[in-house]
Structure formats: C-alpha cells, structure tokens
Image 1: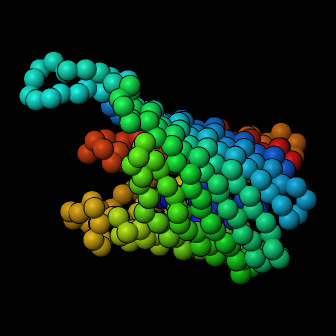
Image 2 (image 1 turned 180 degrees about the horizontal axis):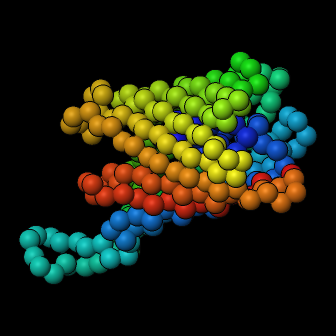
Length: 275
C-alpha cells in the first residue's frame, strides 16, 4: 500500500503504522513477516494484538535486522579485509490503544532498541522511544489519521547520544464496499527526508483474493538523500482462507530495493485473525 497507513485500522500491523489503528482490532491477531533482502541482509517482523472489550487494545511487535556477519573493515585499499564483523539490530514495541468515543481513538507505542556491531568497543547501543497517534472516523468507512513517530527517541552508544528525527504523518483511509476497494493517502514529513506523499489501493475481485498496489515519492524537498525526485512503486497480493469466524491470510509484496538500484525485494507474510 506504499506505506500509506496512518488512517488504517483493525489490523495487528497497524500498531507499527499508527498505534491508534489498533483500536479497530477484533479478537486476537498475529502476523509474521519475512523480507528477502539483497547483500545477505535479513529482516523479520512479528506482531501480536488483542482487544479487551470495546475500548482497550494492546499489542506487541518485534523486529530483527542484520546486515550480515561478513562485513569487512579496511584501514586502506587492499584486496583482503583487515577483519570481519557483524551487525544486528532489534526493536521491541509495546502498543496501547484506547477508543475515546465512537469516532475518536488514540494510541501510543513504547519502544526499546538494541544494536550490536561486532566486538567493537562502543559498537553496541541501546535506545528508548515512542510513537503517538490519533484517528477520527468521519463515517463507518472513512478514517482520518495523524501520527508522530519518534517525538523523542534517544539512542546511546556509550557516552555518545543520538536523537532520532521526528516523522509526522497525516492521512485518510476510505473503503468502498460496493466495489470491494480501499484507498489510502498519506503525507509524510521528517527533517532528514523532507516531504514524501504516499498512496495505496486495494481491490478484491473475489472474497478470498486481495490485489494491492502503492507508490511514494522522495526527494521532493531538501533532505539528506538529495538528488532528483523519485517515484517508488509496490505491488502485492493476499490470499485469505476462512475457518469459521477466524481466517488466515498469506500475503506477498514486491518492493523496490533502495540499496541496490534496479533490484527488487520480496516480502512474505502470514496473518491470523482469531475472533
């Protein structure tokens, strides 16, 4: 969906995009995801969530990323590296969402971050942070969302501290039941990457199949990336299997690789919704 998700609700992964979106959760949900990256990188995601009554919702998410255990160091130009090291990064999210009224919802993420870089002195760091989000339902099928990611997220390497740049997102999600379609639009801003509009669409030609697509634009305003404006596309498909009141969905997404130009990433997810 191109990362346009600040207005989405009712899915366990919404805890990452906008913690207020967890307020639409029904029953217990779990999602596991594997992204096939280039250059021997690995990225795994696991999320769980549950609603308690109609007003309180909790969730937890775990991310693991590694750039590999064969990274090379060199003091100067040479064919053979001076040494080999590894990089591992972990993030733990705890999500709490509250339905304040039939139209208003709010949510917060509390985050713990960990990075280990080989055996280098000062190469390991820890961080804590948060996300804060709200949603407003104009109608049953149209939701406005706002989220502030990392309003104050601090990461420490020994005596060195780094503060994450704040990312602000505002958007709307709309569902048209007559044509079995959904549309999302987000406008995202951060001090390091500038403005990045995002658009996502979903259409269900059959009850058990969902076709998805999205796009986002980068380098529209000043940011550390620089360069010419870019248009990034994504495609996806989901297959749903119903089991009474519960269901499982197998999802596949095709994304552009932002490290290796012209390469694509493959993302596979399995989501269970148990009412």
